[in-house]
Image (cartoon, rainbow, N blue to C red; front, side, top):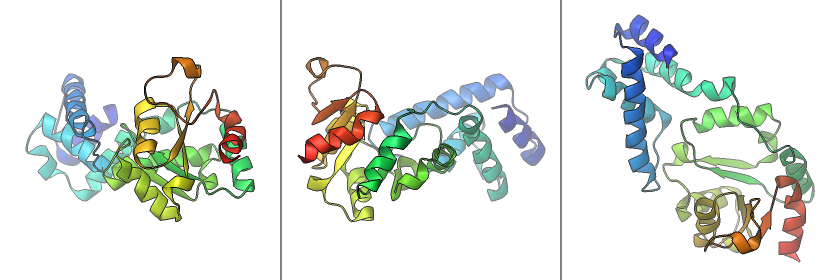
Length: 220
């Protein structure tokens, strides 16, 4: 958040303390949590406006479009500087499935990192090109497990729910969400099938390297 302070001071003349910024960040998180609990989302600019409003209710009106772009960039940059770990079997599995003629699409809820930044990370790891389409919650306004985010993705690639398989690690967001959308599901988890919760996937794999074999099992 230090970049926020620099931008606000130089571009808007608003001096804020690190403590105030941390508090505003937490307040914006509470706002987002309420929204996300309803399986809804907003563009990342609204994340930033929530931080600004928590600092000063009048501050969002003083921020120009150019400054907002700078603030959004500062807000999104941490994920590029300290990127998340990636399953080392992901690229091989996706390439194998693409070579077999499967259409691959990505459906993802964001947290604090916008979809535009997540695409940059996927490209960095050579994963982005494997997907015909990517759907991020901040760009479509709806989050997993709402069936609509799955339906939007299927429409984008011309797919049918009964022929689609969703892969994810969360029992509710991924397994329950996919089943509500009429899709089959594969859960990535270290748990044995006997230890899974009430929302049972159609198959379980420990890592993405096992995904092509799991797809074969579902299709056989």
